Image 1 (cartoon, rainbow, N blue to C red):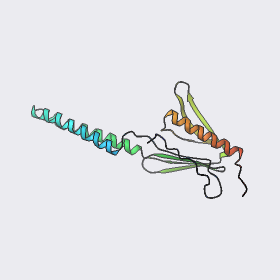
Image 2: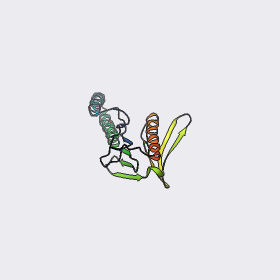
Image 3: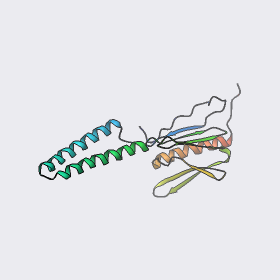
Image 4: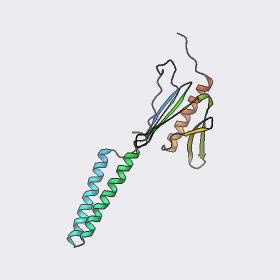
Length: 176
């Protein structure tokens, strides 16, 4: 799984207007559910063996502390998996830019902008690359790709920049 899934643009949105750019962005997580289960089993087994050793030596409170450690690690992984449910969907057509942001709790916020009035602002640091990407229209701004790695953020900036310039230039439609 890649850090960001960028879907190829469909040719036609169904209403006669071509889609210039589509991106569905999701945070990358290197550990899947199966890997999580394996890690937790190993951590629990090691904690149980070490806790039992301390219990046999007479230090019974340490056994409970090992159990709390396992619980804390499980909770941290669960929070990590929960934050991975966030996503962004960006669609650019000649007349509309739609940015749908869904937070980890499932709440959605949508921003709609006219591509003719929208600019792509990039904040870069020389040693670290592209740090922030904003779509700005009439004073309002929406940050996109905030959870992406620098290289993926640059790829997103290239795609959005190309789609915006195409929308501003005008789309040539063939006559049938």
